[in-house]
Length: 295
Ligand SMILES: [Zn+2]
Image (cartoon, rainbow, N blue to C red; front, side):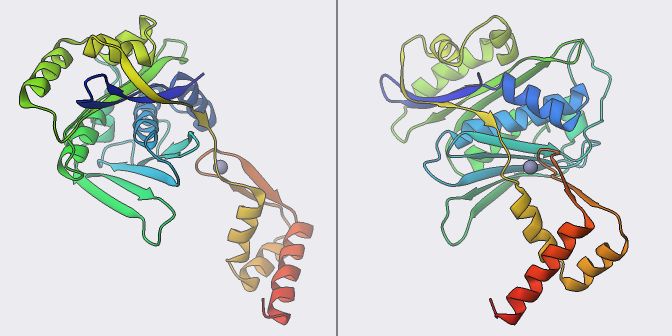
C-alpha cells in the first residue's frame, strides 16, 4: 500500500515527510502506458505532490513542470485525502539509460519552470514558481521550496522500473528546517544526506518511509500522521456532461448530426466516457430546459 508520513524529529528541529509510492506509480504507468523514462519522471512528480500534499488539511495542490524536453509538460496533483493523479504530455518517450540510470533530467529538460499551486478552497489559489535547475525534479522542488516559499528543504525522489517494465520501488522524502534550526544541525544533516545511498536503493533494500527517516536522523521520529495514498481521479460522467454542455447548443447539435458516438478520454486517468446520439439529445434538452426556466 502506498502511503505518506509526516512528522517531527524528537528535538523538534526538522519537519519530515516520507512516502512509499510504488503502487500509485505502477497504477499511473498502467493507466497512461508510460515508457520507463516517462514512468520515472511522472512517478517522481507524483511522489513530490504526495509529499507536499501530506501537509494539506483541506483542498489540493498541483505541481506543474515544463522543461522544454521531449516529455513535454508534467502535472501531478494531490489532495488532503491522499488522492493523487497526474499526467505526462508525451508518455511514450524513452531515452536509452546510461550506466543503468533513467535519464529523467534530459527527458524533462531544464529550460522552463516548476510551479506549485495550492487550492485551499479560498477565493484565490496560491501559486509560486521557480526556474528549473536540473529537470531531475527533486533538486528542482528543493530549489523551489527554498527560494519561493523560503523554507530550506532537502528533497529526494526515486522510481525504479524493472526490466519487465514493472515499478518495483518508488518513493521519497522531504526534510524542512524550522525557524529555530541551528546552522550546526543543518550542516550535520546535509553531511548525512550527502553520504546517503539514493532513495531508490533504500526502498529496494526494503526500508519503509519511517525507517528511511530513522536512518537519516539516527533517532525515532514523532510521526504525526500516516496517510494512505491512492491513485484517484476527480473526473466523472457528470463533469464531462458539464463540459459538453459548456460547448453550447450549436456545437452539440453538430455532434448529433455526425450520428456517431462521441468519446471523451480523461487526461488524468484515461477513463473513457462515451455519449451516443441519444445522450447528446438529452443534454440538448437539458440546455433548452434551463434556458426556458432561466436556470
Ligand atoms: Zn479522470
